[in-house]
Image (cartoon, rainbow, N blue to C red; front, side, top):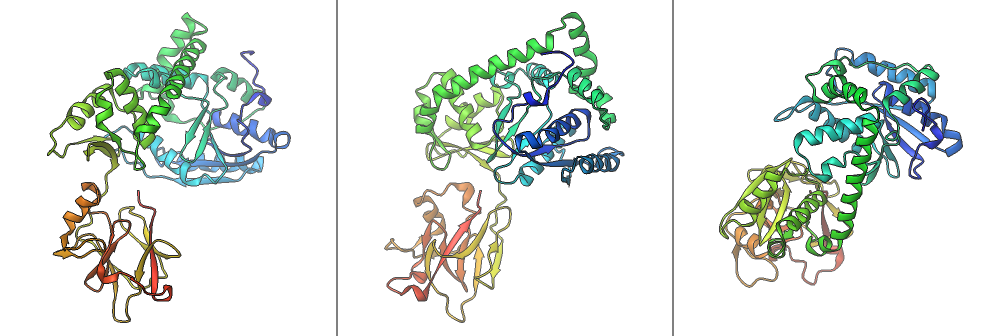
Length: 438
């Protein structure tokens, strides 16, 4: 391919025709949006653009206005999302990236693919940064052209093109774009590579970026093959609740076990662990004493062991002191801390209707003994949690419904005799459903 020619017709969109285009207003995304706009008729594309307002630069409002003008000129609807960065324990680059992709996932519509303007030079920088971190083949695979993104996909159709090719396209069509002043700050690792290191490497070896990209593709192919070979074994090991048993893992070689654990964590949505974190997972969590309650922080969750299984669980604040009053059963009750909601539904947990003087509330702990359906004696809530296999981290986040001060049920776990429908007709019963819990 010519070093100065970019042909929009060569973009690979993997058959997707409904696209959400990440549009920063910079040159790369300006080229991408212009190319896709030109393909609307021939490929039947439906386009939306999204601009993330990070609020970091003093020019952020100006960039937003520029993006709006460009989209107006191209007759492409623009969504603007202002985000707040959480930099606790990480750099501003990582925080901004997480905020962007969280916003993208919230704005994507069913059947729509996210499209970003990453190109060959970005790929080279990503691989070099992975080398700096000591990444393995998965990290050195850098950015694939197609990536599963939640329930959608992320497309990177500009990966075959260099920054020089995109600049030539922008000049040919007299495109206008914004320049992020922070792109000149070499305190950021990616800027340091782009401004200081890669120009020297390209001057010495003109095909360096293309060669690095080829290496990333080869690493990606090896990882894809390993995924394919390990998939049947992984599918047999992972439970419906995304836990993985310790016993079979102990029989694997260390190399095979590490490969299985990495793919299990990816399946759980956890960030990829370092080599040290993976070793600690096995030594400190999997091989800990039977009576221990070990935990290891990884990303926004914790690695835990329970019932001879390993779990990666998102940390939820315990709700032991919380009491929620549910005055109208026909209105869903939103639970705190992202624990979902309770609704009266056409199916779910069947309960007798409350009497006229019984008020509904939800709590997360129950004192004394409970007499539940299917058990002949009273038991403490702790004992019920143990018998029903409820892991410790869910015991203060599982809602318990009350009629006045009498516990009624914990959805999916138990119903007390107090609210047992027995032989009551359906007209004297209702169904409770707990949805949206993580």
